[in-house]
Image 1 (cartoon, rainbow, N blue to C red):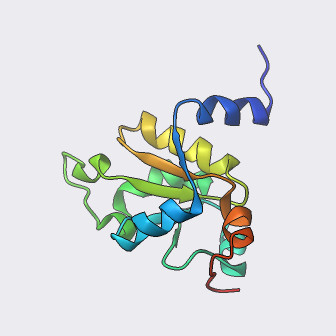
Image 2: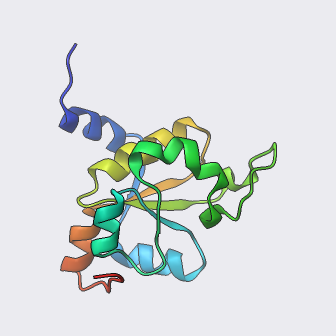
Length: 129
């Protein structure tokens, strides 16, 4: 069977949790890491305040040692029990990224519904723009 990118995103959304911008704000205020999975050029053009950039293409390889997760790379990978918020431009890449983290044993990878575009449409502030 052949799938489209939209099919893969729909499958990912069926098994991950998406959050809206107001929930992201509340969770980020409590210290939850926010990861922008867009490409570095996209990140540099504007990103959510406090977000760190780990592009989707290298996420699985870099997430365990990234400062956003406090370098918790011990054998138990305890940070995998903590929620982590992911976003991209529209929510597709972050849904795929959340699904990948779920497969890697993360308990609560969350994807921002509508991504950066929804964030800015809702009046969210940006850095680097």
